[in-house]
Length: 495
Ligand code: FRU
Image (cartoon, rainbow, N blue to C red; front, side, top):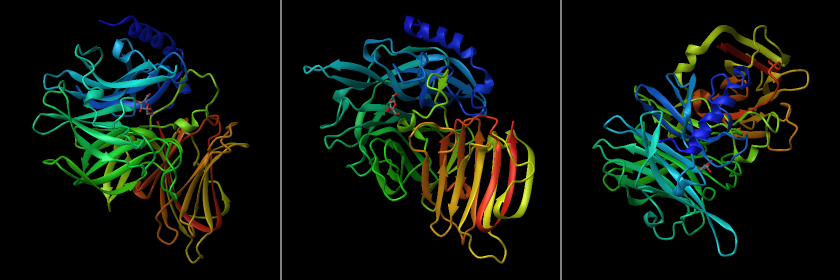
């Protein structure tokens, strides 16, 4: 039975979602059907399609009582909206259905696990959220909340763990048919930890152990964990709040963290070996992964950051928030690599290619422009020339606007800067990243959609993501060098 709250949300999104023209949305990045979107939820392969749910407030382009929006896709790039899947309509989730995950049960039904939120008034008048884990089961469109919800609550949190910060379960199925999930929690030291739970059937869950402890190393509370095997290692992804930057790694505010290590399935111990940011740009948070039927581990993040939500086209717009490109993950030399899913190549058309163009000062190339493009650049010192001081590419460019990506080889620093992208708000608009290069030789792949840029460095060694709201007519691209640079350029339109 659909509750009144869910029915109203479905009615509302159907009516007002239709009013948003296709051209007002990103072309191949998922945006909310209407209103506000944050974290990806329940990213899964079910019944022949990819499912993506998302943190959703249909009634407003700002965060509010959380629903789960829902969309499906066959190629991870073209999405079709389905009716909202969950609404905050039960006693145990009346103040929000927060983030969670999905899997397919052996009988073919889809199981969702999410965080139910209830605000509890304290004696001093303040309000605390109590967070528990809840289930819903469905056919891929309609879901029924489980009669024994919540399935995990404060009694399932280890000593010292908070019942106010206990959220974002990510489940998976083990080879023996049993289930595990990881959940973010705040321990007594005020930072974060990831808790591991197990279940024989997906419905009855038990606490196993602390899988990872922050100990105040990386920010405070750890949100939205994901844990999976990759190329012989195990990877723990999480999004820490209240980060302190450390060199060029981790920016302040809400960041992303990737821990790579070994996992012993017998003892269920995770031994961390290395840490890094997941994304080095401005807008990326709370990513979640899926295992594709052909065995690829693909990640999508919320291409936005809590600290920059005031960067908007206009204050009241019909939709706000979008997902990142789906990215294929791998591990090379102990680091996480990300590449746009190969399905993106099927959208390429109209190749324009140049080999070894000499750039000194400013250069524009015939046929190289556009706002929905996939462009590969190889940059190196021009033949017989000294190392250049700086190379930059400007895109989404008009008379008055552009966003730039600049590289200073002597410092090994790549910088994305959107302060001239048309924004009228004083918020962070740039980010620097240390990159590897061989004597000034660097590979870049720039994917632009209407409202975003994602930069893949050195075949995916690093990624920088940023949203931009520059008017669509600004489609110019130019190359600038201080010194003399040789550049190979291959550009495709994405259609
Ligand atoms: C992360 C997050 C999650 C929570 C959700 C609420 O962006 O804070 O921890 O479940 O957003 O919308």
